[in-house]
Length: 261
Length: 311
Image (cartoon, rainbow over all chains, first blue to last red; front, side):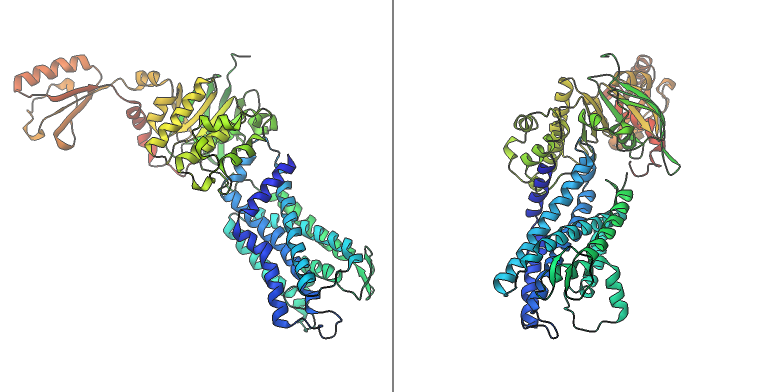
């Protein structure tokens, strides 16, 4: 039953051209644009190219667009349309329905990320770091689930899909500029910007996946160390987990299948 | 067991933030019966139905649907009810057959999808996207979704609101078929003809209370003692000395004269005597029984202005 529901949610996604464009095509377009504009030379002070930085950064952006923006907006739209209420009146367990929605956006997120990474490798000479790939995939999935929880929190706290759309865009876009996604590191940012970015989960997500693409770092990633030359995703994982749990609790507490009920 | 009512409501009370919407209503519905809740917007029809469907918690009173307490809204309960909600709730990008198939997977013993599409007259639209369907077709698709689980009790909340007469007739035909198959149907409506055409029994709900209930014939007998006379005659040429038994005359548009009386026999004798004496021709004289609409309007008319949003 869960598998069937996941299939339905995926089918719906692939029938929405606008969603398809923003989640699947947009990150690749941004990768092409940013590496064209900034050139693909090594970043000053670092050993890697622009593409080596932007590929994981835009993979993260794709994951967040799927798990946060698309999940929140599509769920709120279904609620506006009365579809959630109608589903709640069938014997389908509500948990199965919601789990299916979340798993389907995670699958979409992984497709989007795979496409960005494949484009980087094929067209922009990005070096895959296969020894770090398991930790990278691990952080992609946990980051995706964490942002899915945040998306559902926004749905639970807003009444209409218009508000949800406004809130997700107003939070995601500015944060993406501060969180080493659109702007590569190397510029001095004001302290408050750094603190803001450090507080929210997006930067930890992009840094963790970015590190999985840094040839200079050593290790498989599943360590707590903060040594400069070591690859570790667990500290970032912990922050993503904490945000995910926090958002998940609020989402479950306040979620309504119909705002009038 | 078979004699137990399919739906039983007693002393049902519902308030929203202290504002009462349903004020202590009671009714039973026998298995296989089509029961209508009739009332203006804001009368509490949808509140009552949504409590029976398991969507809303009641404030007080007892409710029983097929032995379940809808307030607990358990999965077994949802397996034996079918819903057609007041507003359309369909995924626009799925096709007709995909929509029905998706819902059929929720139920332990669903009907056959193809057969059901034939029943609701959508077999030839099976591969069309939902967004391309007309309003009437979407409504019939929703009725199909309400029936796919082969439920014992079907809730239809204003199933024909917003439909054109053809589409409405199609929906009525489907509801009659349900009744013939022995389903218990609960219908809410503010169309009198709809209720007269479909329901075995009805309750008229005004401001959260049942102000009349029974069969259509019961209500006509109880509330509609008056017969209505009307004939054509230019009003300014009407003789003044009217027989007192005719009560107060009403002069409508286009020179139609009409009045309502409790004793039509007596009134008819006096009217014909008077007309013969003064040479009034009584063109197009008609005597009609009161309709359910007359009763409904007289029961709801006074309070209808206070109707808020329907819920």
